[in-house]
Length: 164
Image (cartoon, rainbow, N blue to C red):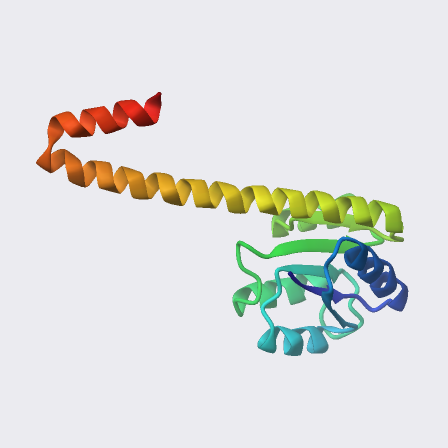
């Protein structure tokens, strides 16, 4: 798993990196501003991106997140964790509209970060498993549909077996 931490505070990088290492994730890169983050995304496909609202650059976290989505650096399979000290209703509503995987309020507590990382990894593994099952099921359904035109009684038997 490749992880990118985008935050202007060195302490955030330290806390998150330590929690990720404890979770067995060793491929962690850091960016302190939007420019560095975009450069890293040009050469590496990240599975998880933690992005702060205040990234100490000409862009805020929202603009950076939108640009990363537009450029294809963030896809539907990328875990995105938004970080902020601000918990005002307006900001929280904006974060929800961006549809991140999670939202963490700074300052970060290492034990809470470790717990959330484990939860995110567990959820992501479940999504991957569901995708595999759905792919296999759609393959079987395609086979059943094709078989139906050749052998209607056999198709009925296969469908009955899948349901039971």
